[in-house]
Image 1 (cartoon, rainbow, N blue to C red):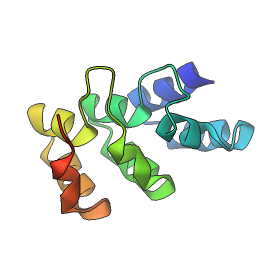
Image 2: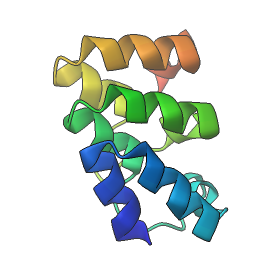
Image 3: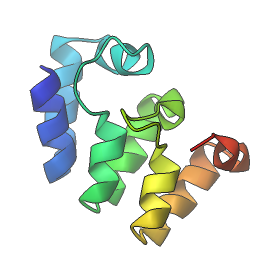
Image 4: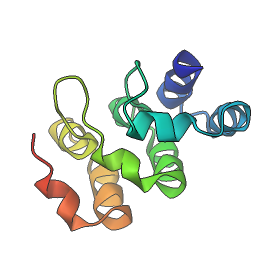
Length: 104
């Protein structure tokens, strides 16, 4: 299930995202609670410029923006480092400007 979620993030497949959530309604909660062994889908999607997927994830579970990856990087830091301005703006608007205070 985790692999499927990350695959959906890579391809930006929102229909697959919703199908995964129907199968496991707590999957996004598991990511936030760090009971998830794979990469956060919110870290994977910006790397692949999946702006609509990021927007959908944030509408479903805005707390995902606070999750750090295994190297303690936030999605905002990754998106800004990769030059994905649209995703950076989206994170700042949907989550709030305080997200930039997450330690990297």
